[in-house]
Length: 172
View 1 (tube, rainbow, N blue to C red):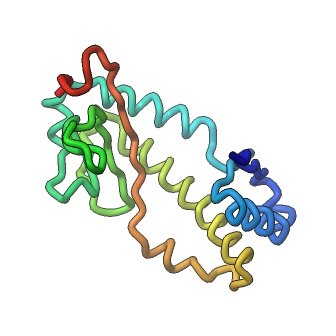
View 2 (cartoon, rainbow, N blue to C red):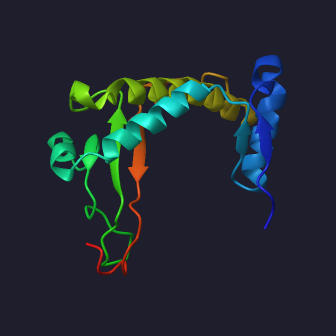
């Protein structure tokens, strides 16, 4: 197996064409790239990790107030709601989906909505630049994917996997 290429995101600011070329090469050779020196603020990451841990430590009853009846597109999804494709065993994970619009209002005691919104926005700004680079790497105009990204349905998912204390088939 080939190593996953590492690409320094700060190159985007100084030489977008070179960054785009490296990104395109990574995608065409391995299909993956690891981005370093990205624009996501460390404080945003730590805040979301802290707030999500606080959220997932709540009781199932408390978290269940944030379940949306929309197929899991936004809001809380409890353990056992999904299973891997082709598996009869329910997943142990629980998660929360955040989208720019359509989220349930998160009660203030969770302090979670602001952290999710901040991370989503920082990801979105970085994704916009990455999609510009993808367009350049394909010899398309830099803004070729802008409307797709802006008008698309992007979700931010934070997950919690509980410790496995018994056979996974018995866990649910």
